[in-house]
Amino acid sequence: MIEVQDVPFDDNYHLIDVPIFNVCPAGGFGELSIYGTTLMGSTDVTNHIIQLESAENALFDFGHIDLYIAPEAEQLFWQPMLDWMIAHSHQGFVFGK
Image (cartoon, rainbow, N blue to C red; front, side, top):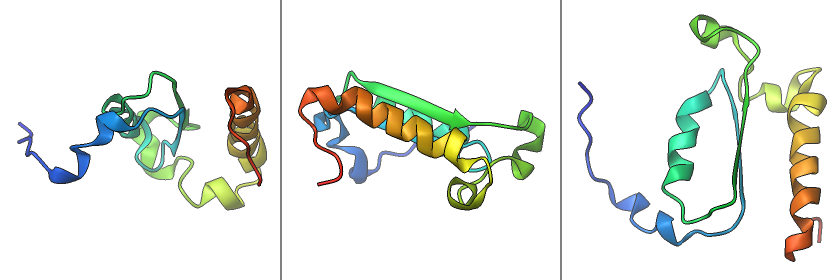
């Protein structure tokens, strides 16, 4: 059984109400990263978990450094990130300035 402890760093997460694009490689925190987005006040949350292997092989799956150096990083990470940013640019956010 996991013991849950109250921690102070998440006390104000509910005040965060900007669009959130949660990207996490399955070889990193993967699905576990989704929990943090449920604490936010945002109703616009996109979770993008990059998983290439089965759960049993998570140790060998796409990892944090792969976001930058993997041959398929452009199609698995960078293009989805750009697409999300473009889709949200109508909301008054300006990227790249």
